[in-house]
Image (tube, rainbow, N blue to C red):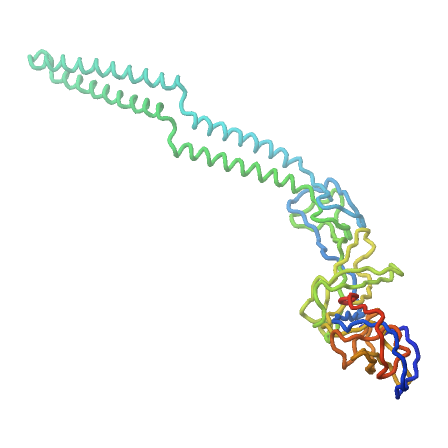
Length: 410
């Protein structure tokens, strides 16, 4: 709520009738202006961590080293524990060797056959050509002798068989020469590439397991629980530590149902805790949870606070003054208030004379008060010399603080 504090006032007995011939009063005035009053709601809350997580391991293994204990602060990326990696390192070396072998095989296929392989294939073809020529000549000679009945039918059949075998051998060696010259087929190269990809994936998987054998903090914070010891064996997913983020930290306020509609994200909040006597911390509303606590009719409002020295701890009770969103109203300086025996009032200058305006209630924010009914924006209220005024008295304005609009409340 807005603060209600007694302004600096002068007790004046109201004059119901203006004295005849009273000289003009010398006064200072200020304009009526628009102002957003900031009401502050006092509520209770509790400190809680923005993030709290139970850390698990992604691979199984024997615990070789534990680097932190409960209560210790850690930085993001700091190693918390390490698993034994001896077996995995042996597997990694084997995977490296198999990957290198697959790469060499692929490079060999891509390079094609060696020149000496081509020369050997050409030699076999040349030899096959010679044998075929010899077989053809022998067949021609036997066929001539067969016509003169010198060679038998059996000899002719044998010569034909030798010629066919020589032709087939030539075809076979020529095909081998063509294969050697062309190099490995595309599908063979593709299989070799796939083999490299498989071995590379195996290598990467083992390397990843070794990297994950060292558990690291995902964010800066404090270790609140330790569930492991050196020599223990962890299964994949087993919990190891509870890590709590401490900076920034959050205060969750319980705001009543009647006030929740006036809470805005970004509004300023003053926080005090018993652990820091005499100190006020300032934060801003981070979020308004649109669901009430069951049975309490209060809504959680989350406030973020810097906590670099870890002075605020989860679970601490907090008290807060929460700035509520108020609409703009007409306001005047508190120096305009005149306290009389019949109540508070202010004087406004109209047509060079003092006009009295009752002030039945006072809503104040520092040196600013809400203007009473009957005043309009730009009206001039008397801020100095008002203790000598009475209704209708002429005034002479010595000072007009029209350029000193204090603006919105904070």
